[in-house]
Amino acid sequence: MISHSPRGTQNPAVTFWGAAQSVTGSMHLVEVSGDRILLDCGSVRSERGPSRARAASFPFEPDALDAVVLSHAHSDHCGNLPNLVRQGFAGPIYCTPATRDLIALMLGDSARIQDEGAHLHGIVSGELGDDLPYTSARHWVEQTLRQCIVVPYNDPVQVTPHAELRLLDAGHILGSAMVALKLAGPRGDVTLTFTGDLGRRGLPFLHEADAVPAADLLLCESTYGGRLHQDVDAMAATFARVLERSAGEGGVVLIPAFSLGRTQLVVHYLERWMESGRLPRLPVFVDSPLAAGIADVYARYPESFPEPLAPVGPASRAGLVDAVPLGSRHLPGSPVHYVRSPQESDELAEQPGPCVIVASGGMCDGGRIVKHLRRHVDDPRASLVLVSYQAPDSMGRKMLERKPTVRFHGRNWNKWIEVVEVNGFSGHADRDDFLAYLGPLAEQTGKVRLVHGEPEQAWALADTLSDAGFADVDVPAREETVSIG
Image (cartoon, rainbow, N blue to C red; front, side):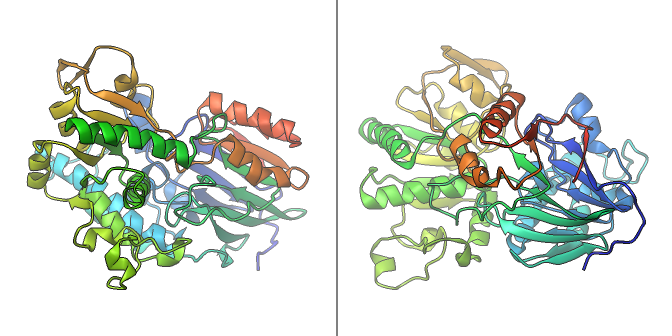
């Protein structure tokens, strides 16, 4: 039970320290009667200049935080947790069981890259710029994981004397959660709902999101607040055209995808469409050791899926395998093959088509997709299918531009590869999804603040929600504070 001690006389409040009018670095500080709870602690994409400086330090004392609540395992929501721990935060990190398993992989992969860079630059026995002796990034990841407290969906938990937490399924990726807080205000309890990243409807893979709780303050993501996604049939038709051309001409189909969430969704649908005959049956290579490990985690949580996701081929129908998500990689005859070692990846880059390669590096800026682009960017038989958001300064956005050449790795390349964009695989809600999720709450919700969206998308959703009857909708700037209740 939450306490109504007189430690504070002001209303509970939230300050926006990340993902305010942007889609990166999610971080919101809740203050209630002297307690301080951080919602998410995400890394910032392209951490250069001011962004890098902000990511390295915090606008509050980490050791003064009472708790962190983590919505899900994408890096822009969890990636800065080890840095928070390194700078003194020693309290609990609340998350779902699947999120804890996934951040072990996501943060571990990031730590591996950081430690390899430290060895490369010879700083492992020296000092960092902040005068702290170098300690491996892996060490801080392990400490972060020790501080995690797993919370099943819908179980109320007292996280501070003045705050009660409930996590609800957000339908975005495995383990993703909405955060519902009941807070002790000076004139009684007030409520806060933070949606995290909301999943889209009509893309059956995970369960759809739970009902969004009405609240005195609703913090809602707005990544695609002004857009509509393609439906499944339209995506299948696009892939059918691309794969049929590949099968006929012997070309390679490249699909850059983020290792967590997008890769699993794309592989799931490619496999099902091939099994049903909607797509020609081609070999599918998943070139990402991280994605392979994530698929193993998905297999531990069959209850997270609305129906068994094992293949529909003869082996599964005969009852020869357990029904596990993405489990077809264990079956003879499956079209999906996971590539883990660098040597296997190098060999795959030289393999002729027709085949499909789903490779790490959703925006083509890094990851294993880059070597495949070098090999196939000037091959008119090849296709590049972009299934992820492409930031304005990304390599993927350059590939979408109608120009005959593209520059990367220090030279200009003929851009003869076919470039196709498919936006329906997004794990984020679109405009109609937001209306369906939030529309019933118009008369029951106080303030709405839209986060995790570029200004154009956030303001478009703000207009939509205002038209739907919400009285107080705004798009906060970084450092802005809003009271609850």
